[in-house]
Length: 326
Image (cartoon, rainbow, N blue to C red; front, side, top):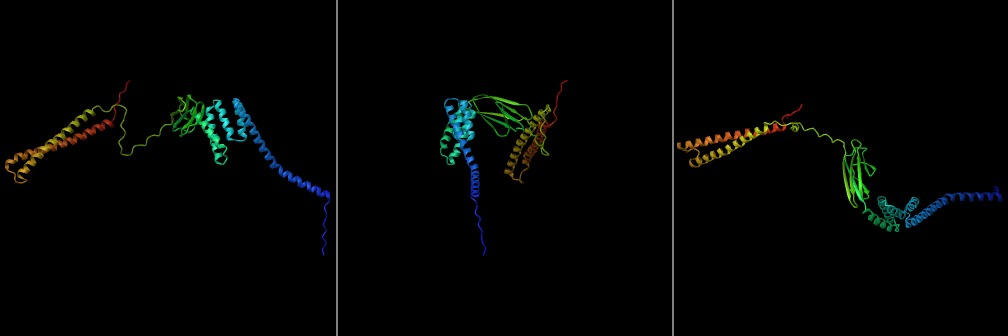
């Protein structure tokens, strides 16, 4: 049978072990406690700055109020402090910044209200209403650049922005505005306009980059007519004469053709194709002569029309005559 010997710890050892456990537990709680204390201190400082900024806003000390409210918002981004920042900007006549801030506050407050923080629903409505009233006192400048080259910029009231295919839209207080287009290649362009409250001023700029060359004409196509110099002077009289002959030939063809047809119809009705008498021979000869004359007129008309077309082609595409002075 084995004998088990149990050693008892001394009271001093037990005291040391107890202190060790206590210190370990205390050090484990330090990070969590310190973090909680830091968050609480941040919230308290943000609340203090918010209250101080609110009092300064009521006292119409707008620059001081803006500084404290922005410091509060930086610590704790609350839509309520954002709303007061927008009001400070409005009172400092920084209307464009105020309208943009109102829009940001309204969007953020709606998002938080949708996530269940109902207290921000009223903040969203107030920011949207006040921002809409202030927006109506501003105008809009809309700038469009056609085919901007890389590196081109658009400058509105000294503020430069990259030029793109999309419109550049800028809120602006009423008054005269100067817009400059600075292409990467080519001369600077500028326009001036007067912006009114609620107005939408549109400006168009065109890049100085040359347009691409047109594609070559397909094989067999007629070349483009030359525009330099004067066309041959004889082509118009020649075309008039040939055109007159074409009309005359067509008239002869129609007139004598109708007359020949009438004689044929009369002989055919009276004696048929084979039973005509010798006395009708003279009338048949007249009809034959008229038909020959009609055929000649048709030929003259066709040739003259072709000549007219040829003269017009020569005038359009023929060589130009130029005059030089020395």
